[in-house]
Picture: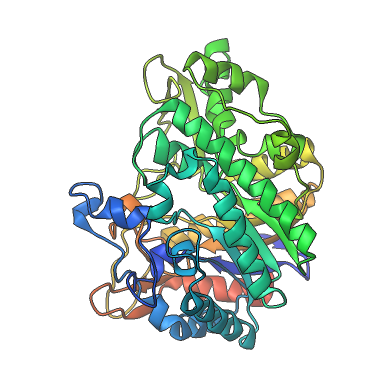
Amino acid sequence: MGTIISYPKDFVWGVSTSAYQIEGSLDRDGRGPSIWDTLSAIPGRIHEGDDASVACDSYVRYEEDIALMKELGVKAYRFSVSWPRIYPTGDGEVNPAGVEHYKRFVRKLRENGIEPFCTLYHWELPQALQDRGGWENRETVHAFVRFAETMFREFDGLIEKWMTFNEPWCTAINGHLLGRHAPGIMNWQSAIQVSHHLLVAHGLTVRRFRELGVAGEIGYAPDMYWYEPFSRKPEDVEAAKRAFGIYNWYVEPVFTGRYPEEMAAWLKTKGAAPVVEPGDMEIISEKIDFLGLNFYGGNIVRHKPGNNYLDLEHVDLGYDKSDKGWFIFPEGLYLMLNWLTDRFGQIPIYITENGVSYNDVVEDGRVQDQKRIKFLESHIAEIGRAIESGANVKGYLTWSLMDNFEWAFGYSCRFGLVYVDFRTQARIPKESFYWYQKLIRKNWLQLESR
């Protein structure tokens, strides 16, 4: 019969997306330009010159997408709000059309029994703010808090689950050190200062949420990866600590009010240290109600000076990989949830992203994505193990509801439970969609003996 893993009665099953990746309609209803519009317009920056001008056309087709979610049976939908739809220039006047669009959308979710989990920042910085220095300029922190306050006031009672930032590592490191993401800067000090400003903006927003007495809960959604050393050599052990530590840089201060000391010392060797103003660390560590965890994998690493931005290399020991080449490491999720619990106590945790990219194809009107099913099953099983071990995991929101614009990879990656034909906008539920639907109905997972 195999092993059966059950989940708590109130466990929340859901799906996730982000505005820029699915909405399209970038010039509709007064939306201002974002840093991703700017990056996408530069030849060679996005795979095959793709852009998000149409994406999944979800700004228009959101009712169709909600109908799919209702069919799937999810109780929660994590989405993001496009900052330049609310404030076209980042601050100044509010755009009423943007506010009204999201109100229609959220009401439709609630009508269908789906709770909105709202992310305020999923990388869509208004270009007007970038023109004034972006996240390197502390004024952007205050502009973000004003945007957040507008959302809190307008949606109080409509949205009760809030996240300030999605994956601050990506904004800082991919966007300001590696240059892969908007705004495409490559500088260690820039990346670390942006990191700090993002965390200060997070803390100030949590503080404002409390001051306003908004109904509901607030947290944020960092991405984290689990790394093991290739050997017990001290240099390999230190390499694994660095690989993990650069992600923990965005978690430890939120819970402890301190940056990780070993990582801070290593960053100084790169000439990077955040400029911290008095009171900043107290602001950053404002108590949150839950942690959103985005988990995609991990790997074995070893020390290699001059390689990678962290002086290490990833060792291929034959683990499965996604079609993007990301290593698949399900047990890493169990280890991560245990580490978070041991380190910070039984904090409520939602898995806010977990998914895999495969180059799915439609055959006879169906998408047989068995490898994705295996990925989901193995990770959801590890969550069950973690819950049994004492982790306070409240829900699982997989990435993603549907195939979408995958940032610098354009439309070359498919993460969805629903296949999207980007020429016709036809939506075709994959086999993983029906597998997840059954799991949600049962609320337990049966693992076959192998």
